[in-house]
Image 1 (tube, one colour):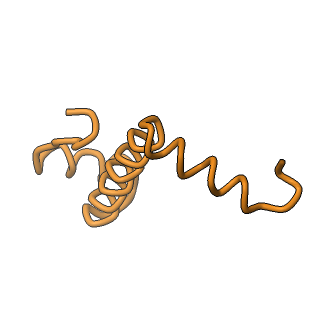
Image 2: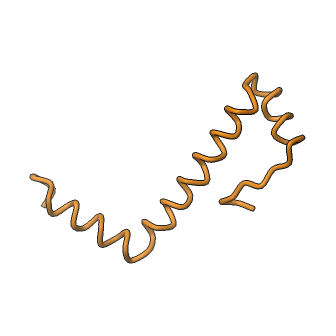
Length: 63
């Protein structure tokens, strides 16, 4: 699973031990990665493009 990053507990333990971090930090990173993937998917949609265009119009010097 790419966006959901579905890892078993043993996989998370291995990542945490190998990176010198806690399992909680690994979980937090995976959650941030998943949320960023959702945001990127939205930005590629028409709603995201419209939002970016309206933000650009409101920025001075961006036109």
